[in-house]
Structures are given as C-alpha cells and as structure tokens.
Length: 67
Image (cartoon, rainbow, N blue to C red; front, side, top):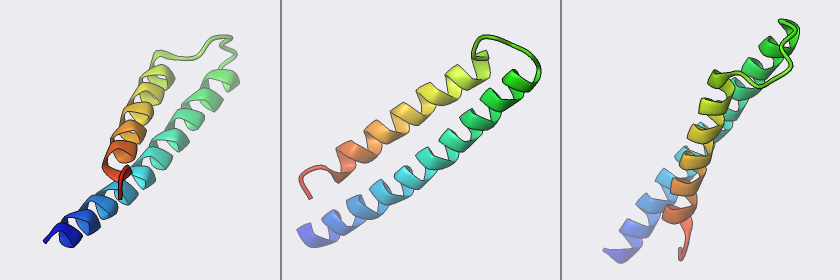
C-alpha cells in the first residue's frame, strides 16, 4: 500500500514539474512580448506566471521529497 502511495506521489510530482515548465514557457513568451512592445519592466502577467510557476515547483518538490 505504501509503495502505491509513493508511486502516485511521484507521478503527481512529475506532472507538476511538467506544468511548471509550461508555465515558465508562458512567462518567457510574455517577457518577449513586453520587450517587443518596448517595455522596460516585466509585465504583471509575467510576474504572476512566475509566482505560479514557483508555487507549482514547490508543490512538486514537497510531493517528491522523501520518496
């Protein structure tokens, strides 16, 4: 039973890591758009995406620790 729980946690952790990468790609796209628009500061959207990515990475780490 414990092994099954560890496998499920690992799977979720891996999926969250993939989602974090997707969010990072969106943040970079937002940053590129800001640069192309001539803006000199990060957009609110990019900042929000970065915060979301960090939260998802933290969740992935918490689920993946002690496996």
